[in-house]
Image (tube, rainbow, N blue to C red; front, side):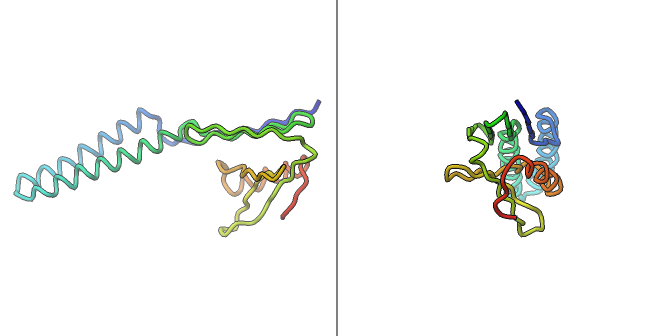
Length: 150
């Protein structure tokens, strides 16, 4: 049996510890400036500094929620498995290879969008890849799937 497996993991530029240290560095600098202005009598600036730090922390939490994101495509004989994890949600799609079609179309930026379609369901794939990687991968997938839109 012919088995092909592709797996992409989201690229995180900072580890959780590095994010925590960076947030502390931002908080210390922003709050110290806000405190200086508060001591000069411009106390509302301290409130905006606190809001600024809170919003940055919220953004970092959102980034951390997607640390484990991945996409996986497995072609095992006549079986096709697509598994996508986005934040805490994991979706799996099982299809029969002869029924799966690959949709490949140019997007607005000049790259390409890829999706697999079967039984009325369209599943975007390769979202964690750059445009160049997605284009190279689409050439590999053409050997496995019928291409619908080019």
